[in-house]
Length: 212
Image 1 (cartoon, one colour):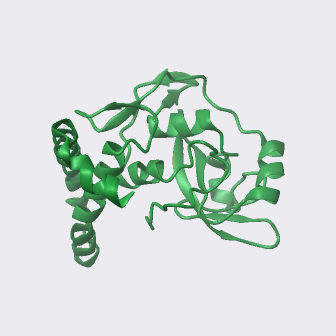
Image 2 (cartoon, rainbow, N blue to C red):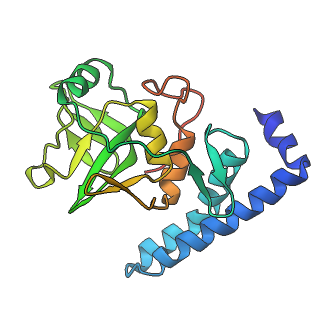
């Protein structure tokens, strides 16, 4: 892999794509950072931003996500399917037996009349069966959130390739009908490269997204 990283930039098209993606990611992230009122948090985010921007662009240029890329907009493209529906029994069967720290998982997020699939990672497990995701918190093994205020809004789903594709492409649904896709945050772009695309229900042992 190190040799691949050293030689990939010998290709003119790869260098141009890398530069294009870096510009897109900066243009996407900086307006969000400008809204931060906490100066210390802003400084930390600005300090780490170049590292994560270059890392995300490198992973994309190396082709670690097997989807069609729109380099100009920094997003992936795939045909949108019907809005996914939670299967609590399938979730329980999977997470009670096969959940592991570091696994990239899909989260079904419902906000008012809009639904989307987001990416998160498992970072804690309890003996009693609960699963903790880095961004969205604690879930029971059946995928329902442990926090009462989140019930009906977020659901942890059993990993499946169609769900990962929907999350990576920013697919959204309005009243269960396809709506314009959303743009992924830099964190999700990095998580997409940490998916084990050959076996999405297992961790990618060779590399982790490293986002907290």
